Length: 196
Ligand code: SF4
Image 1 (tube, protein in one colour):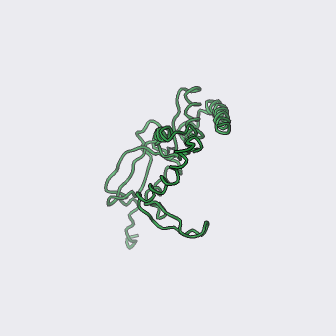
Image 2: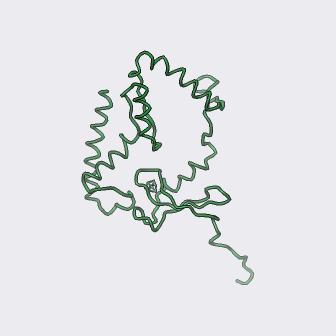
Image 3: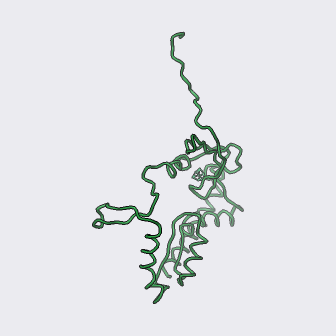
């Protein structure tokens, strides 16, 4: 045993820890983000957070790739090859904005309500409605209306709130009730979306 090499089983993973909230789903678990040399090195659940009490799901752990993935887009891309050829070049934000304005201006001038505007889950859903209404269309929606907003509404109307999925596994009866609400509300939203 004396000649065995020393093995550090618990190496230091970071030089700074920032406490924040996971945004990979609507549960908003507390997380400790470990920074090493100014970069995100590791993410763990925050044991002192009331929502998840230290638990972190696989999606939360994988959120490190939102920052570090080599495939992450850092600038607008413009296709220059045939559709499907995968040939893109980076362009400036000014050029991208001018292109989009060129496509949208004729619609806004003539029939702005012809534009159906849908945004992803980017926490800027109030800007979605602000932008769409100023453009002149009421045909807009965002990710939340088809996903977490239903879950939040179902939670509020049934159990008075909602927290981490991983934290509420024990309250199965509440979830069964929430799931029914979720299905009803999603159906209503879909019906609304198809009718508009
Ligand atoms: S349940 Fe997972 S993805 Fe959702 S906030 Fe918590 S850690 Fe993030």
